[in-house]
Length: 162
Image 1 (spheres, rainbow, N blue to C red):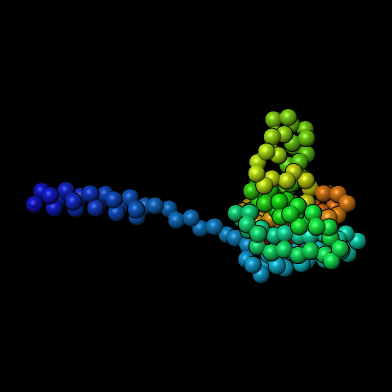
Image 2: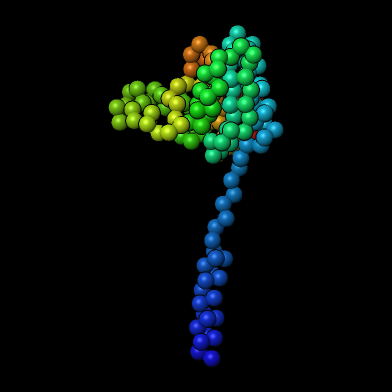
């Protein structure tokens, strides 16, 4: 009988601990919204005369959608993905990260993080205060112009992420 009581006590303690375990609930970017954002970003840049690539990643920085203008350079494919990954991972626009790294010698080693690209054009996608993905744009004649296209598209589609 003591063996049974000890086993029952162990099970009760173990099961109680499992019952108190927290289950995380995270918001993420849908594939449909990612496709819409990628296409709209390329269109926004084309309206300004820029042939770009636009990558959209989920909250983990994994590619969800991609679009490329007909005349966008081949380097823009990976650059847009890396900018999106950097923005999602750091939860910060890449233009701000780049400027911080230029001004702060202690942040200069951010370029050593695998996959990070410290050029303007990566913008987090937020639902409230939560980063649920990011857009990366490459191909305009300056990272600040890449970022402007992404910012315009996010502002125009803000209702998607309420």
